[in-house]
Amino acid sequence: MGSVYAARLAAAGHDIHMLDRSAEHMDAIARSGLSVSGPDGEYTVRVRSASTTLDVGPVDMVVLAVKAADVGTAARTVAGSLGPHTVVVTIQNGLGSADEVADVVGADRLAVGIASGFGASRPAPGRVHHNAMKAVRLGAYAGLPPELLDPVVDAWRAAGFATESVPDIVAMQWEKLICNVAYSAPCALTGLTVGEVMTHPECGPVSRSAAREAWEVARALGIAITVDDPVAHVQDFGAAMPAAKPSALLDVESGRVSEIGVINGAVPVQAARVGLEAPVNETLTRLVRTRELAIPPRSRE
Ligand SMILES: NC(=O)C1=CN([C@@H]2O[C@H](COP(=O)(O)OP(=O)(O)OC[C@H]3O[C@@H](n4cnc5c(N)ncnc54)[C@H](OP(=O)(O)O)[C@@H]3O)[C@@H](O)[C@H]2O)C=CC1
Ligand SMILES: CC(C)(CO)C(=O)C(=O)O
Image (cartoon, rainbow, N blue to C red; front, top):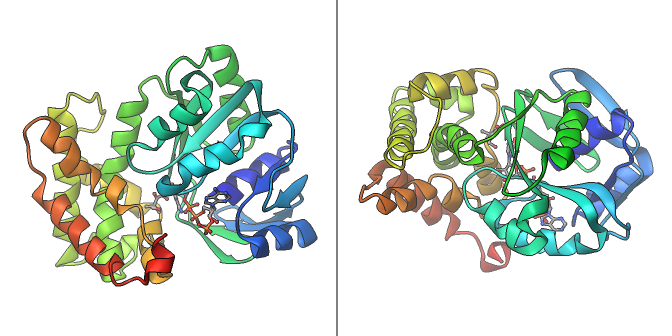
């Protein structure tokens, strides 16, 4: 996802410095540019730098596009690039990442993003693919003033993202969480794509129950989600990218630990806060973790 963001922002004329711990990906980009294929065809862009280390003074915006387990380390890594007016945008699925980033970079410079309907993957070093590109919603975590948030929103919009500034980031996160719980664990457990889960006679009902359950928990918590029908909500989401494999499935396929704990696993934790249970998401989470326990310890670090 970081490569998709970088490519579009670079194509819109921004100076982009990319940091990733994959030397192969960074070297390929530094050598031949970053190639993107997606709903609007294929293109290759040049970025200012692509490296496994970051040596850039204060920048206007830092985007953290790592998995939930890595946000703390990533936030500490970019400390040298933060000036008094640098906005940090952190974009993860699931719940809890923004709190961790706020502790490191400070709550008042933080914007929280939710990216929806991309289905992104990295087929080869220097190349990324995304199935669709529905929206990037951004909002202030706490005290980020509009004079710092608004130019960030404008820049994402001008780069071609359907970007909306959102006042209630918690509702935004739950609206996406309902979609993710429908596909993350069901796909990770079965190997099915998003579209296959939607129409599957056995797995489809499980996926819809997971979404319904998350929706009920959000309502019990008093979160101001604007979703009236959770099943229609997740079907609209899935219909835009039937061929996509959620990152939880990509992780399981490549022997990595997924974000299941902050996606399906977040639902029972949040349910307990209001005295509820969430057995569908709890069971799905335990089954994904069972698969993950078969991963050799080094990949789990
Ligand atoms: N993929 C998708 O379609 C979508 C994903 N999301 C969310 O976006 C977030 C990112 O997902 P995604 O792009 O798929 O994740 P990936 O794992 O594909 O990309 C993250 C990259 O960041 C690298 N990285 C992690 N920590 C550091 C660090 N400290 N310093 C430098 N590089 C680091 C990782 O390296 P390494 O491989 O070594 O770990 C990896 O190359 C997740 O929360 C995901 O749920 C949201 C919408 C769509
Ligand atoms: C593909 C999926 C379902 C998970 O990575 C996703 O979150 C998105 O593209 O919005």
